[in-house]
Length: 253
Length: 253
DNA sequence: AGCAAGTATTGATCTGGATCAGATTTACCG
DNA sequence: CGGTAAATCTGATCCAGATCAATACTTGCT
Image 1 (cartoon, rainbow over the protein chains, first blue to last red):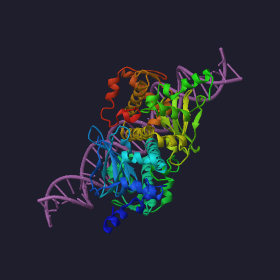
Image 2: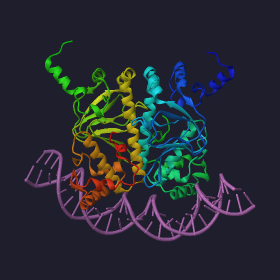
Image 3: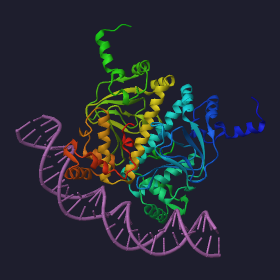
Image 4: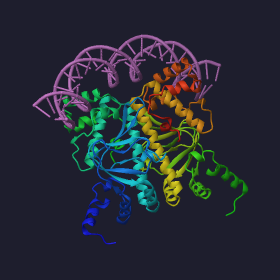
């Protein structure tokens, strides 16, 4: 069916094929024709405002979502009202895989800033993975990464000091930004101290103090949400007796 | 090809079809013929002695493994020599999924007692999942469960007190034993206090003291590795202000 | 602009659980 | 068996980080 040129171009522009994140995302390792098939099932809805939910705890599981631009945090709500952050998700990272098991989401996902996500209906995806072995393999790899990432965080939470946790967190962000073509040494945090603390199992005051401390040590330059890493080596040194390699904290291999 | 009756019977005996764990394992939801196909690729090697390794960190990833009898612990080694336990795996639970991403294992898996595992070569499994949608779905579910399980543990490690952690651990074991047809209130721990502590992010002394404390409170009866839960309700109460539902700590939904 | 509400910093104090140390019990093995 | 190593328990001390508290700084709202 013929379509107007304008629409075609528009579609082309947002296609997986032309997406800068393709090598971090589901299309990795796929042939051109296969990417087109994947493309056909991906839904690109209008971007979420800060605070908007991708899904919430208890929602029926229908799709997985890939962050295109912006940042997503995933979190669970405790009975006493407090929330516990379980992940921060940068462009190219998948959210919602937790929902497969019970056909409903067991955490909530909300945008920390204006954020665009690609929605991939899971039933369609499963049909595709049956016929495209490379896609199946890539989905297994993404899920496996999710597992290793969380294992790494468990180790970090189980054993490390506050200093080591924040260092690991910053280095993880640094590596992930770098892999997405951004600076490894200078970036903006899209999450609050409170959220960082919740994620790392620390009080927000401790996070704040550590930023000050890292600044005193000339490791960082901190201006509110803006972070500049002055001495990458010192930051790495803080992790020297950790198992936790950065690839287990969200950096792709 | 005809085979002697003895061998046939023998094979039948260990077939997935006749395995009591089938409903916890890969065959869940599969039709009879499909189970046979799965069965054909499963390798059942001789049981491991206590301390024997299923795989070690850095090993090339070839297979995933399902515990048939016994217990497996997975752990990582820190540069300073200490080890960090990342999981305990009971019959019907899968180990090795972490290896998919980088084609090598990022943790080690060792038997805590005499343990039999079913080895499932992953390449063969991927070929099968392409042609058996139910099997593909079940594998996705198992991986999703792994993710939610670890998320639950992260939350536990991030926020909870020592008491809450041990309570959650014991209840998780209780539920899992129960699902496997064993008593929910009386069981033997196959791991040491040290290993429990490592897993829960606690010192072994703390674990020991908590067992004593739970016994004083008439919640448990502890005799070395033998545990009897006297008051299940009190144990649950300790978790009352936790997000962590037990299904996130390894209990199937 | 000016108020209100959230967010961050900094200081003072307190405590849960780590660490250190010793005694006791249990498992292993020649 | 007895002897040695490993695991467990228990007590005493200490400290990293939580909690409480007060003060700024930011941001949005009317």
